[in-house]
Amino acid sequence: SGQGNSSVAIGSSSGTNTQGTSCVAIGSNAGRTNQGNSSVAVGVSTGANTQGTSCVAIGNIAGNANQSTECIAIGLEAGRATQGASAVAIGSYAGRTNQGAKCVAVGNEAGKMTQGDYAIAIGDLAGSSGQSTTSIAIGQNAGALTQGAASIAVGSAAGQSVQGAGAIAIGQN
Image: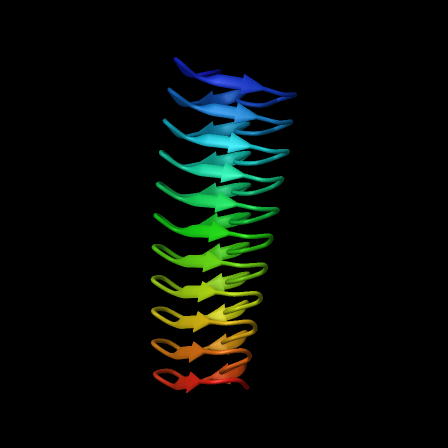
């Protein structure tokens, strides 16, 4: 337990239980438990419960629990619960729950709930609920509700509701 070498912890209960070396934890409960080496957690309860090596979490409750290695979570509750290795979540609630490995979620609530490995969601609410492995959703509400594996949705509300595996939807609605 304790703070790692060359690490910084500022805030109540930040970096208190097994903070790795060369870490930064700023904010109440930031990097509180099991913060991996060379990781950064800035914000209230950010990176608080198991933040992997070489991760970045910025924004209240971002990367809060089970952030894997080399992840990025920026925004309110971005990457909050279980973010896979090398995943990127940028925007409020982006990649919030169960974001798979090597995923990208950029935009308010993009990839918010269950984003499969290698999936890409860019835009407000893109791929926001049930985006499957290797799927791509680009545009507001694109692939928003249950997007099948290896499917593509490009455009405002394209493939918005239950898009099948391997399906392609391009254009508005």
